[in-house]
Image 1 (tube, rainbow over the protein chains, first blue to last red):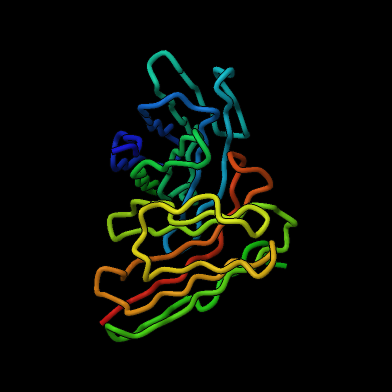
Image 2: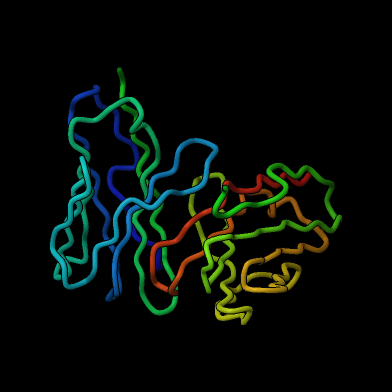
Length: 109
Length: 112
């Protein structure tokens, strides 16, 4: 399969804790993107990190990219109940994005 | 104003029927996509159009036919619906092919 692998598949944390999820992929990429999907809604773009970048921040989100290991991680700091959602990584290569299976994050108040 | 809109939001139909899903984006993007998300949440690209021209057709049965009347619209017509077509279908758009994508709210298709 050309789909990336996300780890863990599900994560349950208390409000205020940090959440880390990982994404591995198989081919060379142009960039890697992270999206959030709330239940019953469409995907919302969070961060795009290019293949020549190693780390990127946006608010409470931190994304790293290690092209030698073909892996990326998304860290959500000081989580809130509103962060409860599924998080997807997507590899941009060729002429399309290929999405991983997602990590379901539950933030308990 | 909604950036990427899809209609209908829910579609329940019998096997063998033909149905269409419409998508419109008001972002001025050149590229539009159709994705299928299955019950396990895997999201798979089906089609991509750039300026009304088909650029991706991912081994989708030819019962599925996309149509792009202009670069702001990408519709999906499905003939002879099968049980396995039940899924959530998302439309998306982006300014460039590998750029950030903006997703519509999805159409939940249920084939009985």
